[in-house]
Amino acid sequence: QVQLAESGGGLVQAGSSLRLSCAASGRTFSTYIMGWFRQAPGKERELVARIMQSGGSPYYANSVKGRFTISRDNAKNTVDLQMNSLKLEDTAVYYCAAKSSPFSDYDYWGQGTQVTVSS
Image (cartoon, rainbow, N blue to C red; front, side, top):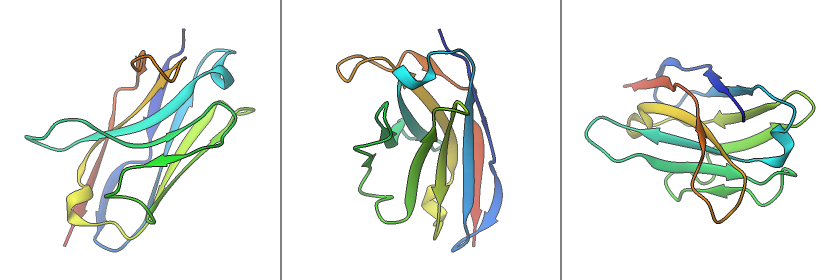
């Protein structure tokens, strides 16, 4: 089992950058596929980025491709989301999540961190 805690959210202006971090408990962090999701008011939760256990094969939603970068440090049990060129539509609660298999649902979720982008 793994517990996840996000940090780094806040209020920023459009065009600026923000870095989210997710700290995981447990000794098996390196065995989990990690994802960053977001949910805006009135919208469904969407997968923003995903990174495999070894740190390879990152996936990005089209809406963030070229602006966001996901990375992980298995020695520190962290997964980060670097967000550049933020847009108003990036405003959402951001969650990190973990799953053990590409074919399973995400099993573990953090509590979320609010990102608000203002004009």
